[in-house]
Image: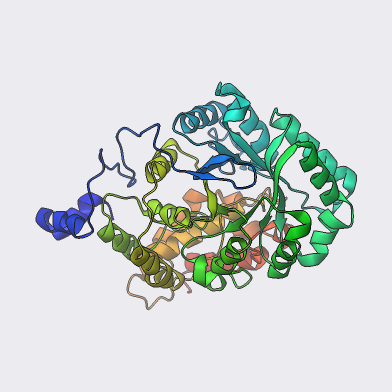
Length: 467
């Protein structure tokens, strides 16, 4: 619900009273049709956190270089569009704008953007004109595939990161996605081959300034690495945290760990946390309309996204909160949230963690965070596009449950038309052969072939009108 709709419902006087009852002041500027504030953004109000290990003064808003803007797709060949290309000119513009407004932490990986994120990030940072000591680069050792588990391949990945990023040192280096594959994968990727020892040595040499890991999945691995903190001396750890995952991570994905536990384990050891998925892969923006209305009633002038970012940023042990900002309006909205941050009150925090989070998990969405680790599909499927369209329709009430449902025909039409518009037919779920190559790369460990089969069957029943 947009502000103008909120005012229509309540009336001007009631809307003004709602603002006043929350103790809110109208922010300078207006709100655009997407719910983002417009108007001037301060360049000197960014909130920073200090890294106790190195003394780095890190912007609380971190730029996640996972969802970079793309150029329009080239003409289709045999009905399948050519792979998208990063719009480097736009990346340069947004990175420079972020730096100008106080953002100094940029998080990338060899696995992001079809392997092009590091190179794009390096180009944008150099083109910005800022000196190397004015920003921090975070990247990862993303040796996911078994053919990359040797010591030599790991070293090659790290050295290539330095080359792509056009730098001779990495500020924040992460073991990428530990927990995926359990202890067996951790040992094979980093321990038994001597690769962690190599990274520890590079930290001693200053080629790596801070060493940490990003965690997904098996909590045994998380616990093991923290139990050995005295040995490895982790400088930071990256975890998934948002107001839904704080208590209800298992409700959104049975294999995830509650963020409350992860955060508290870091806090009691004094390890700074870096937050990924503060928006749960964008799902905390694309929520059911009545939940959006609930948030808007509390703070009509604020975007829905700002609630999630304020939540993550309000935790004192957090060093930076990552956001994959594809469009300039995303960047600008987030800059307003963090310039400076207005921490949540205790009442707001409890309300989000309990009432709003429980409302959210009552909707049966698929836990896709649009990270695109599953891509490219060898058979051309647009896996994230398929899953995100399904989730969007769930949130909008356009997934008909039966022909007897009151809105069946409207929902049926909306789902099918939207599916063809969102995903080219040759990239839809019907073309999945169940090879399973995508599953091992999914941080949320979604059974993607099963979901493709389920969605394809659902689509066919809608087409035949036999649901």
